Image 1 (tube, rainbow, N blue to C red):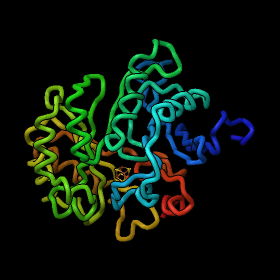
Image 2 (spheres, helix red, strand yellow):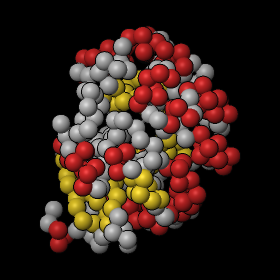
Image 3 (cartoon, rainbow, N blue to C red):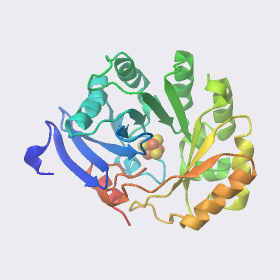
Length: 297
Ligand code: SF4
């Protein structure tokens, strides 16, 4: 796409197959990335796409497998800046029907502004540029935010939780948040959360040799036993700086999935989409240093 064709504020837009990643420059010069991911159509002629939206510039959570973490925390996004990503996706020709707050940042660390944007989306008139069917918020397990979200009791917003490890030792080595809010506390917070029929999405980045052993699948299944959580297995998307990490092969990922299924847990291996344009999970970043980190190995 030529730079002159881009909607206002968009400094970059890249496509890979049906995936579109765009960078939006904000009024203070900070930038955020958003990704449109086409979804399988249920009926011919019914286009569906999911828009992955950022809620912060950078992130303070420091997950070891994530390029955004290399930016550090810059600032929270305002509600209008979150909404601007939805409008811009439309201006780029995408028709997102679903929105997932899984882009740069931890949404529940910016709860007030994020919640204000959700209210605007919920109240948007049908057919407007920001009208959507489904919303999903993803958290790394930031419990103060999760408890405040629980109190809102929002039925329209589905919950996804980045679990990524079968036990505290591995999780703390990958996700600093776990040292403050360990897995037992996270599970307790989820038990107290108004989940619909105990359902949430457990996200699990598969790191070869680190969290993908057969015994890890069994531990994970036991951890999730009180819930009807489905596990979304995401083979690691390479980032520079992610030394020591590599993705499993497809067969290894499927073996892990099979172990979870044997233990009675529904699991899917996510297709690795958008890696070539650094648009896949964990690859979003907008500072020069972090962009270097997000370039594929
Ligand atoms: S995975 Fe999410 S919570 Fe963790 S550093 Fe990246 S953006 Fe932040």
